[in-house]
Amino acid sequence: MAEAWQLDIRNWANQIANDFRNREGIEGVMIGGSIARGQEWQHSDLELGILVEERNPEIPYFNVIQGRGVEVIQVVRPDLETQLKQIEDGNIIPITQWPIQLWLGKVISDPTGVLKEFKTVFDSGLFTTKVIEQKLGIQYQKVKKEMVQANEFLNNNCPAAALVRMRYAMNEAILALHWRHGELPRSQNRTDSRLLQLCKNHDEMSFYTLYRDMFALDDSDTVIKTVWPKIKGEILDITRSWISGAYDFFKYAVDSNFEWGQNAGILTVYRLYIPNIGSDDEKLLGKIDNEEWVKQNTEILEFLGLNQITKEAILSLLQKFSAACDLIFLRPI
Image (cartoon, rainbow, N blue to C red; front, top):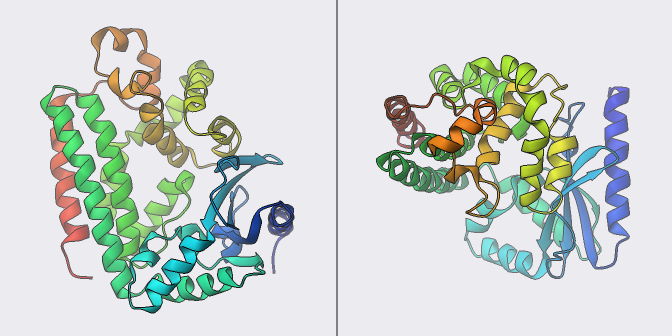
């Protein structure tokens, strides 16, 4: 039986979905994510799929409604109809490209019938062996791309920037590990707790340790208590340079007060994205190995886990990560 907080979240999600179904230009609505699957927690975001004739740039992806995060995923009907025909003809590639947040989604409004057809195909097709193999191949290419950039930074004596790119590679590898074990990747602000459970269940604890080392999470509580209050405003201001709605999303839906009991996972979100937000001139990525900038921004670097970085330490992490990737991507499914 659902608890009171679960009923509140589900009622809120249905209210938002019904608000969107009445907007002009929206041809269908579905609820996705953990709320649709009955796996929500007290701070779940809403992943909302909307069917449109063409993408509407005035509808932000990141939203905060009534204090909760709402990610609006626009699904373009003509494109989806083409993809459904491709799958009918035996091409599984579209399934690998569909937003996983909408798997096992709950269709709220569907006058065209396209969302119901999409749901039927997606729900039954996502975890087939062929799709998982394709997913792993896609993640492998993403990891390789990030590691090329990491090595370039390392060769140019920019170890902190190299670590930033390695963290992006680690994020892709975490997704791949979930696919390998037939599990849907979970909410990013719970990366730490969810990855811990996955690794315990499948005897992958060395990978979890490597993730913790790469994101420098051993000092999470100290950094959050002593450093975050000093630089919170500055870090949140950086998110204004991202896509529309990102500032409010980080402030309210990524637990900027660190009150949800997911400190390491939420710190992972900040340490993954903050260094790479903004134009090339604005990005911290281009500054974090500059000696003068480092001297003036020690607290930002400490919060991001990029202080006291050495080339030797990054090389050691790189070697361990390469070995971990061999186990994820090269062994048979």
